Length: 291
Ligand code: GLU
Image (tube, rainbow, N blue to C red; front, side):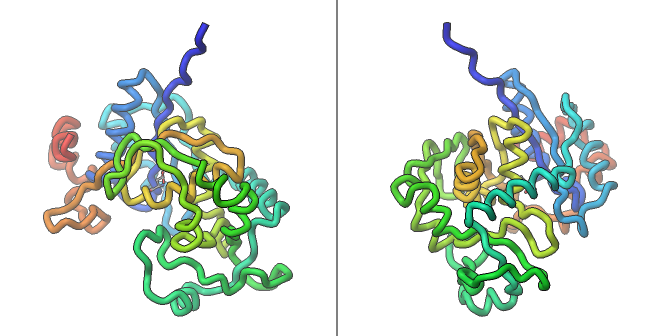
């Protein structure tokens, strides 16, 4: 007898650094509707790694907005900040494998050394490698930990092995990408480079946290905006390095204002709390998001 396909688990993973706007609503509705259509589960996670900007009242507002839209989640909300011990253990393992190195560079130093930003670089200009290969951990200075991309590719078996790593795109990337997408080791070296895995303040960095926590929550489908499509090869590589399963990805278009700018906090009038206060129903919000 054929075994049943694993049940679909979708998630919405906002950072509680502000109010939800129509762009967030579009993302959450897309994930929710995909979960409903598949008879699956929708989970909520708070990506609260940026402790300076995350606030409990924003997290509460996000929950209120999602409940207003009619969503529910069968598990308690997962706060990424509660997973520091598990994140730290994975970092220790990557250190033991010799795949990370300490970096004391400031943002200004990196920008000055790297020159003009390159097309397709998800985190700005790739790190120029100043601290790579320096021996001895600078225990007395604040330092980030970076992935040594070249060593990571070698660890996984080299360029050919990395090209055989793929992810499934069932939405669409910013340049029409869809289907089975292989990693490109040359682009990982030249355009992505040695990404930060642990920040100078000691917090795990976004790319590793999202991979580990999607794995922890058993997420089968990652629904998110096209702005994060260029980060997906990094996530796929980190999944391979940490033995974390690869979900299916559904990147979606971004909601823009009349000037073509992505929605952001400055678009206060398009925040769900303002729309709700003005009498908008869940159906109105769906329609305003173009669904
Ligand atoms: N926390 C991310 C954000 O707020 C979304 C999670 C993801 O990258 O998939 O943009």
